[in-house]
Length: 383
Image (tube, rainbow, N blue to C red; front, side):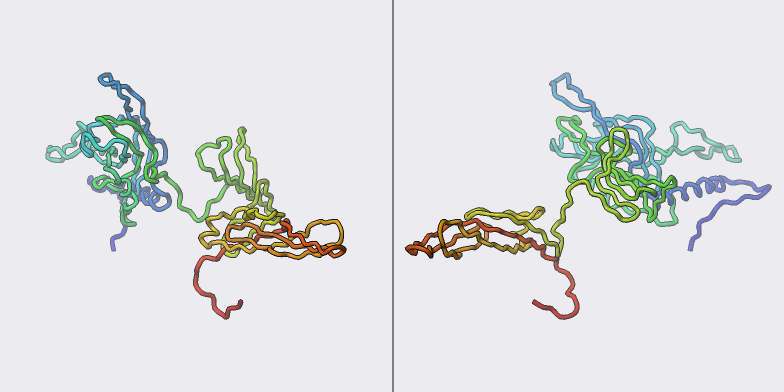
């Protein structure tokens, strides 16, 4: 088994280039493993593709000049990739990959990758015999790569190096998706942040414990607290809350759980149709009316068999002058949830007159969610 080695020195030692390089490599490897295994790789800051609209003086067509803004990313090997200043994307490089006239309107991916290179005109250090040695510096640079249609799917297939290895050396570039471009007539036409559901990836954290030192932790969907943005807070004194940011940066709590377990909900509480859940609606309906579904239940769920309806009807006898005997003739609901409700009344204090009436009904509709198929439970079953 190959162990990791840390350079060590002693008085009077003659240092070789490998000794000094090992000192640098040991630190780089440790930093790379930290970023590789305690963080999710991706864009850490900046690196946005921006387009500035231009007009072609020859034919008056519109196009965009695309620029990669400065920023920092960490790739899946733990290598830091730094773009220190804005860089204009070259259309000639795009043509080398995709041809001069690819299909217009399609979204072509743009990638960033780390690259080691010798500095241009770097100083050469002579060895003991006066012969030139090598460059005394390495540029930890970057390269911008244009992809073909669908190459963004390659990002998910990349594999990190072995646990003992340091950062990637750039010979096999780790692709970091920056965004997409459309192309027509030999020009970039637009910058797109997403295509086919694939977006640039941003750096994150791998942790089973996140501890706040000041007693309050906030989780939000943007780097800055913006008015109307959602936020989840965990406070040592107030407990757990979900809310929206106000203009002054405070949180308007819409759901809160106190440390004692008291739950406060300002908005509407809806129960979804999970397995075993029951929702209900009741009221009065007249003959020929469609019964409503409980809140949160859709007609598609009923049609697909994911929800079963149970309906109860109670007809209301008509109000008539005199003494009448009334009974239901029809009190049903069909597959479309349409009510059919009729009663027949016979006069008991006169000439035995008979009347049929369409009458209203009191109804109750119960919607029971059908549990998803799963392993059979042990024991007997009943009906």
